[in-house]
Amino acid sequence: MEWTDIQLTVAQKDAEQAEAAATMIAEGGIYIEDYSDLEQQVAEIAHVDLIEPELLAKPRDVVIIHIYLEPGAQPAETLGAIQARMEAAGIPYTVRTAGVAQEDWQNGWRKYYHPMEIGRRLAVVPSWQAYDTDRVKLLLDPGLAFGTGGHETTSLCLEALDELTAGGERVLDIGTGSGILAIAALKLGAACAEGVDIDPVAVRTACENAALNGVAGQFTGLVGDLSDKASGTYQIITANIVANAIISLAPAVPGLLAEGGHFIASGIIDTRAQEVAQALAKAGLTIAQRKDKRGWVCFVCTR
Image 1 (tube, rainbow, N blue to C red):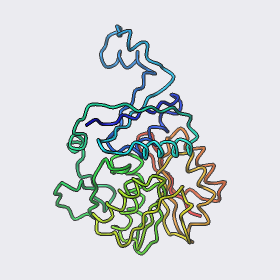
Image 2 (cartoon, one colour):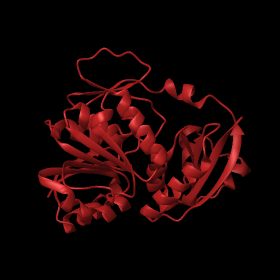
Image 3 (cartoon, rainbow, N blue to C red):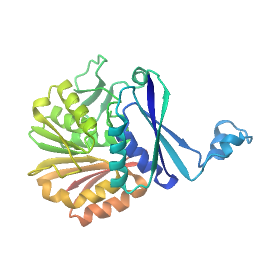
Image 4 (cartoon, rainbow, N blue to C red):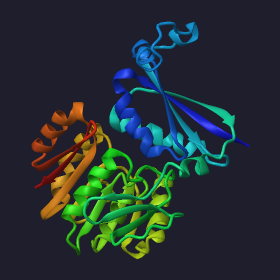
């Protein structure tokens, strides 16, 4: 059987946003072709100025993001998620699929995933590994959907949740992916959490991870677009998505945020942080804290 290689082509200027969105979708890993600075990379890495003509002929103004699906997976679901996320982010794109020789991607990934201690209280632990710790242990199967704790945007949100979750909160996680943020809040003491995602595969994965962590009874997975499935108010709202989606979502947040509540927004590349900050302010949200990590930004806001 073959794996499916979904090849998403975007303009070089949209590469970082598209990569962030693709990471949320990928089930079996992503690979990025970016030749925009080929000569510089060759000089720095190989210390030569002779480059194969085939490489020199590669396009410099586009980036190709490869998303790999395991044998038996349904490409239509992933293609639908790509369309939804690219349109939400306002990114023009083309997409094609191809078959690739089967490899054991999941087991190959396992050697790269290790327990991670995040913030003061959390430990994110791959479900197959034993890890002795006094921290709150969050079990996950990496690669099922976006959100393993390793990406900067996810770890920034987890750090914010660690600081803000005191116990008893109602939580809304928009773009829930693997469910890691909603489940982390529950493990830290939140009373209940709803995870919303446009991708039904992600919602299913989030529900499975909630069960794995013993919080299935407190977690509700919802298939929907951003906040359209939300109801009432929440003490904590998280949105680890892309800049355009946060800008679009911002006006709806104050009406969903309880008095004294917090909105945690991430998935924001630092070059767009100011634009997002202005949209949050226009929506009536006050940025109480900005967190930065390796070119990514997380805003913690109050109403």
